[in-house]
Amino acid sequence: MKDDIRVYILDSFAVLAYLQKEAGADEVKAILRQSLSESCQVYLPVINLGEVIYITEREQSLQKAQEALAALEQLPIKVLPVSRGTVLEAAHIKAQYPVAYADAFTIAAAQSTGGIILTCDPEFESVEHLVGVRWLGEKL
Image (cartoon, rainbow, N blue to C red; front, side):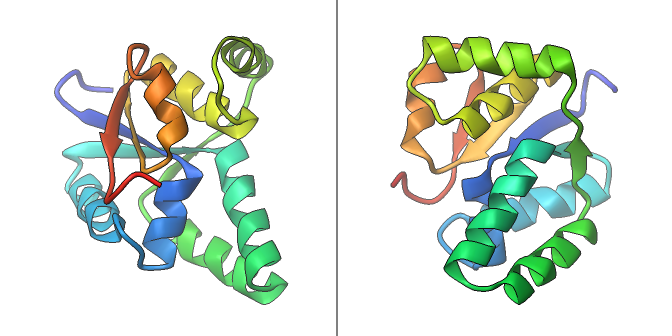
């Protein structure tokens, strides 16, 4: 990875905002466009992918969740696998900070890549001293 390429880590709020055309969707879309020109890279931890899919199925339907997955697979987003080391790092983050377990994977991904988290989830306020956070739209 080149030093001059910015890295963004999507959390489930950012992905759901994009898919559902909510506040922050235009910012996510702009960053995805930038990644097509290779001026940045966009990552989504696989745990957060699962979170997006279960939320979509629970709130909408299985068909909508399948459509969301198909749409995500067409985007210039690199899904980050989860290693044992990542699980242990996320567990440590979860033990130390008041964040959801899935969010701990987002934080771990940002730490390991030097990436900036894209979110509107106020839980990330507690870790702004650890990682960069770019706030999308309005915080919930």
